[in-house]
Length: 112
Length: 116
Image 1: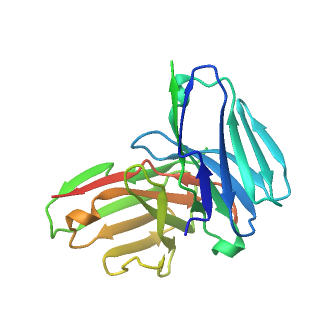
Image 2: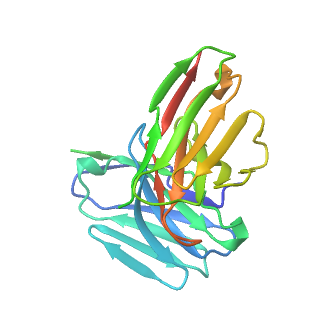
Image 3: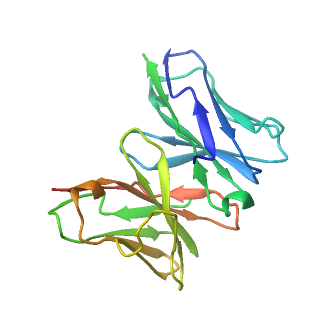
């Protein structure tokens, strides 16, 4: 089964609005990572947050991690049409055999 | 950031033929590479972990005789889909870990396989 489950599965917003997506996982982790995938392309690493961190920023991205709830969120502020993509969370940890396990992804559509 | 190159980016083949996909780390050495498979509008499913100089570790349900993995050098891993059938049509993506056990993964651009 998927270690990470994402919510919502799809999100449609207007340019300039914020986009928030959530990721829940089941077992203990070493870190949680967020990736972006444009249609038909490979994945691009966005941000890594370690299990002892609670919040991390990178440009217009803000990631939070709540290990007590086994959940993480990715916030994209002031979205742009170019942010249209699928976003995946992935967990990394000994419980998963030190392999990166991906969630189902959130498809984000930013309308101009 | 580190670059992982995957080739070919797309391939069309006849049923019954074998197809080889290459994954190269261009500017770093990768002792471990990962092969994923992705169906349309779905997430990535880990197929196997490729270890340089040793046998690959396959995930449950992945046929090792069907998907041959060779990691002959620190910069190259290959995935061969043997005797391909239409159900093998998919997007195959490789990745390599930069450093350490929990380091960032860098992904290739993926290879789209269509089996006729």
